[in-house]
Amino acid sequence: MCRCSSNDHAGGAASLYYDDPRERKGPLRIRAFYVRLALCPAGPPQHAPPESLTLVYLPRINGAPLEVNGARVRPDAPAFVALHRVRSAESGGGERVYGCTDRVRAGEGVRFEAYVGEERAVKG
Image 1: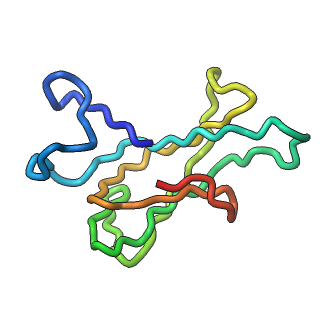
Image 2 (image 1 turned 120 degrees about the horizontal axis):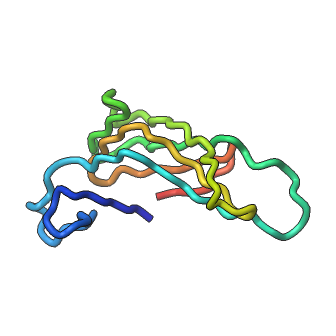
């Protein structure tokens, strides 16, 4: 799920989807990325929740632009970003929230995956 909020448009939040492709004004600017994971309540906990996840922006076949903190990433190379555990009074014992505030500019069709160690937890 992607959420975008912007006050640049009259009327509030900006949509990620456009009715007319000519309305697009450039790459999506991501100022923060958060992932919320629910822990399985069944059975005893076998491992402590990790303090960080790895977010991987996958290589782009279509050559879409990707920048992480102002550095351009070649289309044939992945980009790696650390998602650190966010400590919040709102997060209960059954879920964990991970996030980062790295500045990302992503072109159309950019895909990502988030990993807990070697295991893929999220893709989009």
